[in-house]
Length: 188
Image 1 (cartoon, rainbow, N blue to C red):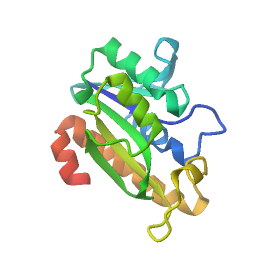
Image 2: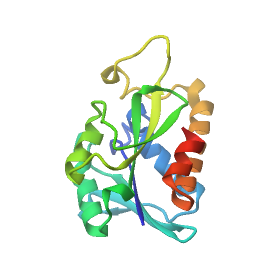
Image 3: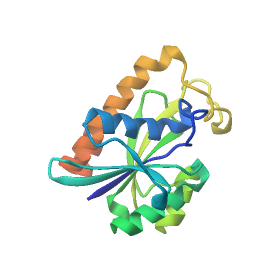
Image 4: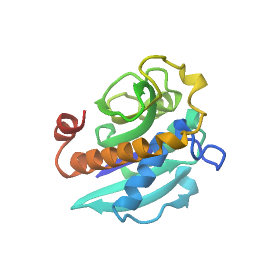
């Protein structure tokens, strides 16, 4: 069983911001694979969808906490489903990765991402998987995360972002159906 968590901020005002890339990607995955519609679960402070990819059970969660408090939901979910950190996949935005790219990593530093830090505290380890989705617009001029995360995607970026979402979807399928190593070698 895998627990997939799409980090972001709840609420319509944050819906299309770069900081919600993980939340957007997990919603795309849910729809693309015909998984049940997300439903609110107050006990887990999250929107939840449960299903299977082939024979592997998966639980998808969109924390309804603000990004910096994501660990409250992550901890509650991992404890209830008795999921070890190695079976947790957190999808998050990453301002150190160029827009249009993604990277699968394991037991990696948060790089100052407060949502990931919160998840690390809740899981009491950094030994969990992450799919880091690039939100940095240009390799030439680095924009600090604080100036970037609450900005929305530009209309001209829509096509590139859709390709990224498909790439994340394919990586997650490979991860769950085959192995994390296979997904890393194929999609990093």
